[in-house]
Image (cartoon, rainbow, N blue to C red; front, side, top):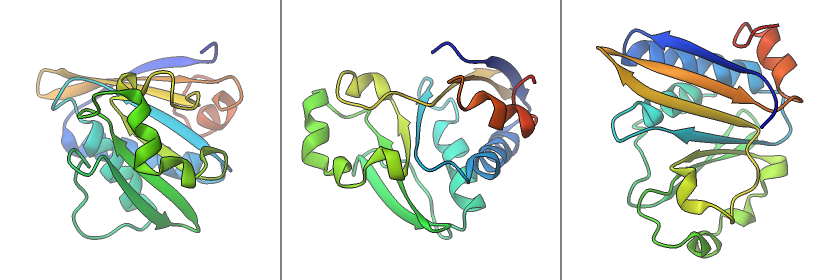
Amino acid sequence: MSGTSVRLDLADAAATEAMGARLARALIGCAGLVVFLHGDLGAGKTTLVRGWLRELGASGAIRSPTYTLVEPYELAGRSLLHLDLYRLSDAAELEQLGVYDTPPESSVWLVEWPERGAGQLPTADLKIFLQAAGTGREIRLESTPALAPILAAAGLLPG
C-alpha cells in the first residue's frame, strides 16, 4: 500500500472507541471501503469497530463476531460487515459466509484478522494496526493514495 501512514497513541479504550468514531465520520462519504484491522488478541480491534458503528447509529451490544464470523449492519443508509476471521481455518471459507452478497465496492467491510482470509479478500483501502502500549494502545493507519486526502482533511493523516 503506497499511500500515507501515521502512528498515534491512544490513552485507553475510550480513546480507541473515539478513534473509531472519528474514522467513521471521516469516511462516511466513501462509496465502498475495505478496512483491515491487525493486532493481537485484546489489542482493541473490536473496541475501534464499536466506536465506528456507534457513530453511524448502532445501538445495543456490539461484540466481536468471533463465533458468527460476520455481523451485518444497515447504518447511515449503507451496508456494513464486521468480520472476525480469527476462527477461519481456510480462506476459501469466506465464500460460505455469504460476504460477497454484500459487495465491498458498495459497502463497508471492517475485517479483523484479515491475514486469515489472504487471497480471498478484496484489497484494503485502509489498514489499521493496533497494539497494547502501557495502559493504552498504539495505532498505525496506512491508507491508499486515494483515501489519504480524505483522512488528511479529517486530521487523521498528515496533509
